[in-house]
Amino acid sequence: MRIQTVGIIGAGTMGNGIAQACAVAGVKVVMVDISQAAVDKGLTTVGGSLDRLIKKEKLTAEQKTAALALIQGSTNYDDLKGAQLVIEAATENHALKLKILGQVDALLAPEVIIATNTSSISITKLAAATSRADRFIGMHFFNPVPMMALVELIRGYLTSDATHDAVKELAVRLGKSPITVKNAPGFVVNRILVPMINEAFFVLSEGIATAEDIDAGMKLGTNQPIGPLALADMIGLDVCLAVMEVYLEEYGDSKYRPCPLLKEMVAAGQLGRKTGQGVYTY
Ligand SMILES: NC(=O)c1ccc[n+]([C@@H]2O[C@H](COP(=O)([O-])OP(=O)(O)OC[C@H]3O[C@@H](n4cnc5c(N)ncnc54)[C@H](O)[C@@H]3O)[C@@H](O)[C@H]2O)c1
Image (cartoon, rainbow, N blue to C red; front, side):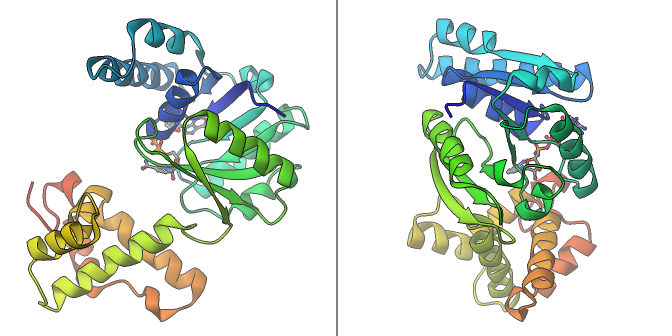
C-alpha cells in the first residue's frame, strides 16, 4: 500500500514538524488538534519554518505555497477518514493516548495504519488499545522533524511486515533514514543517549573534570555536535531523570540508577535552559 494522505493527531512541536515533512514531500496531510487556536499555531509554525528554508535557499516560494496547500488543519477527527496512515503525536500522557487511540480506531477503516510518535510508552501496550495491533507501529521522529534525518520504526509484538514496509517506504519518501527497532524502553537512540548523559553527571560529580572539559572532550573526541551536559540542559534535567527512572524500573538493572547529582539538581529546580540554570547558567 502506498500512503498518499497522512492524518496527524496533535499540531504541537512534533505534529506540525511531521506535517511539514510530509507536505514538502508532496504527501497530503490532515492535522487535527483540540482547539482552532492550537491548529492555527501549528500552521503558523510550519509557515515560519518554510520561510526560513526559503531564506537559506533550500526551498522556493512556489514550493512553500504548494506545501501549505497540502495541509488541512481541523478540530474534527472525522476529517482523518481519508488517510491511509494516522500518526498520533499528541501530548505524552498514557491515559490520553489510550483515549485518542480508542477513538480513532473506532472511526477509521480497518485497513488504515495507526502509528504513534510516543517517546516512552510501550508500542505493544498502545497497540492493544486498538483492534488492529498488526496495523499499529511506532514512528519516532526527532526534533526538529524537518531537519532530523532519523525515524525509529518501532515494531510492537504484533506489528505486521506489511505495516512496517508501508511506513518505511513513506519515511524514505519524506527524505528520512529509518531504522527498525523492537519495542523496548527508550528504543535505540534514547536508550544509549540518556544513560550517557547520566554518566556525564557521575563524571562531573566525582570531580574527574569540569563541565566545560567533559563537554569539550565528548565533542572533540567523539564528534558529537554538543556535549552531554549542555544537551541535558537543552532536554531538561527533569526529563533526563524521569527517563532514567523508567529504565531502572522497566529493566530492573542497577546500571540505570540516576546519578545523585542529577537528582539533587532536579530537586533544587535547576532544570537547564528552561529555568535559566542547569549545569550552565543562561
Ligand atoms: N518534543 C520532542 O522533542 C519529541 C521528540 C520525539 C517524540 N516526541 C513525542 O511526540 C509527542 C508530541 O510531543 P510534542 O513535543 O509535539 O508535544 P506538544 O505539547 O508540543 O504538542 C502536543 C499537542 O497535542 C495536542 N493534543 C492534546 N490532546 C489532544 C487530543 N485529544 N487530540 C488532538 N490533539 C491533542 C495539544 O493541544 C498539543 O498541541 C509526544 O508523545 C512526545 O513524547 C517529542
